[in-house]
Every structure is written in C-alpha cells, then in structure tokens.
Length: 161
Image 1 (cartoon, rainbow, N blue to C red):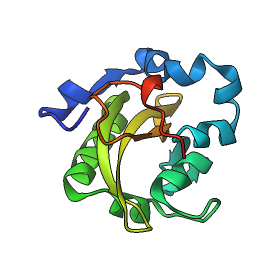
Image 2 (tube, rainbow, N blue to C red; image 1 turned 45 degrees about the horizontal axis):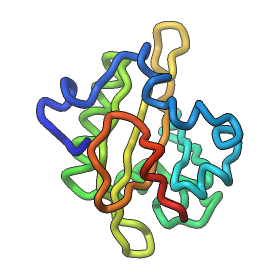
Image 3 (tube, rainbow, N blue to C red; image 1 turned 90 degrees about the vertical axis):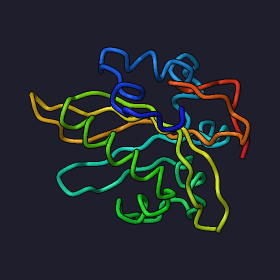
Image 4 (cartoon, rainbow, N blue to C red; image 1 turned 60 degrees about the horizontal axis):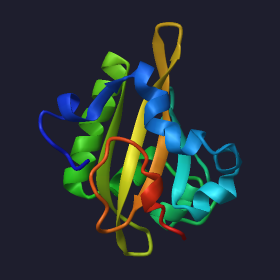
C-alpha cells in the first residue's frame, strides 16, 4: 500500500500478525528455504542490526536494488536508493516500529543502481531480545508497475527476474 497518512494507523500491525503478513512465502517451504527460488520470484529477505545498522540481504534484495550479490551495503546507501517520499515514509514507520514493537507494510519506489526505477513492497518487523528491539527483519518484494495495493506479500504478482 502506498503511503497513507496517518502512517502508523494505515501501515502498522501487531507482531502477532507477522505470520499472516508473510504467509504466501511461508506456505511453500520449498520456496521459503531457497534463496534462489525467492530471488527468481522477485523476493528477498533482509535484516538490519540496530547496534550498528549493518544489513544482511539475500540474493533477491540485491537483485531488486540492481546491486551485485554479496556486495557490502551500508544502510545509509540502501536508504538513499528510496525516492524521497518513499524514504520519508519508510523512516517514519521504521522509527514507529522500533519504538512501539510493531511491524509494518509499505509499498515504496526505489532508484536501482543501474538507473532504473521500480516499486517494492517492504514488510518489516522488530526482533526482540527480552524487552529490547535489537534488529528489524522482513521481506522485500519487487512489484509489477500495475500491482494492486496490499498489506501483505501477494503471490499473484511475483516478478520473475
């Protein structure tokens, strides 16, 4: 879903709903366990460690951003690839997710390293150690230009790369 104000009300969800938001990937274990199968469908998994903002991406995220796989990417560089309106909405929801321990879903526009633009569905949830949020993790899914708004992964819009 494209940014709709107020962002927390329209894009945020409780951690108890995480499985529901990731269900299309989780339902097919042969896809969910294969980095290559996910990447072929325009899907990647990611994690951001909040202690140092280090990123861990699977092949699909590198492909969405048009970056050579296994490159070391800083969070600042990755965030700079989001178009301004998308970056602002993402940063606000990220802060809200960390502060309130909630997940979020947002469709964003990015500028790929190769100069192209694409739309991407971002699903994020905090990782808790005790009462502390130590990381964010989730899924990024490349969207077709005419993809309908959604609050979760949509198995009908897989973009084959």
